[in-house]
Length: 347
Image (cartoon, rainbow, N blue to C red; front, side, top):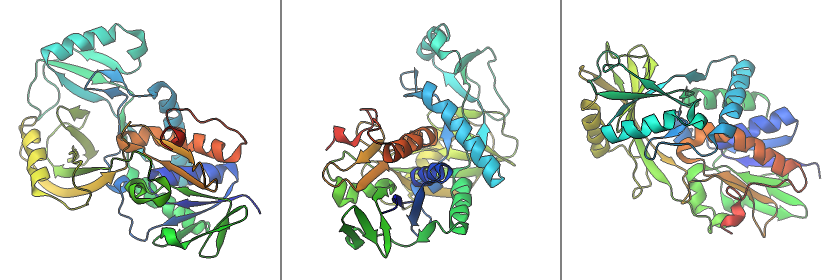
């Protein structure tokens, strides 16, 4: 049988996996739901090399950030659209945070990611704080736009089928699987939070998290930086801003809630001093894992069943690097996956 892959899902994981396979000349078909709603579609798309809670570098940032930048620039060239927008993040600092920030600034390993700010006022419309930190090599990706462009691209190449995938429709034959007349050597599940219901991966520690975002219109509010203090305020241009986000580990639905709206607006009112109008409200479910690491590999007993999932809140940064790793794993004999992401840590 010609080596071929069936990719289930066209969120950020499935899309970037398929893009890498396409560039590598591999044979694949994507199965994507006709309903384009997904966590990827409603995600903020922000990338941040710093974890503010402990003021540490994001996991593997030195490795994943250069790959991320290169892949998204390649996609911009191939698809003829701009998706990646570098933008520094401004972080108001409490006294104890400023002390830690100063310590990090003396650490050479942080030199590419944080700098100090002397100004006690930053940008029109934001309330004043005593101290600020500035994060560099950060920004956002227009993820919804990217996924729509990729869907159109893959469809034009005859590489994408729109259908509601059901596990019971998989058939197993010698050397591979079948699905609705399509034969493949390996099926790769990139189905986001739906992986928690996948019968082949019940042992994986999926812990999906619901998140809600708002979009506001606020004339005069500074659009020079992403502002982050208990929530992010991310400029989109033309006086529009994304505001987020909430974290709900109990409810796995995509319903908009008044509680989340009030929560976000309450935090926003502590940051800005200008009037605004809410123009959009989104909800999605993040495909998070209990150890906050991606999940890659094949099932230990079903060698034709693979998974690429669990990118979580850092998906924009992690997806390009680990899509490349997944392609190598699937196409190169005995290619080793890092233990931190290998599915064998669960199964």
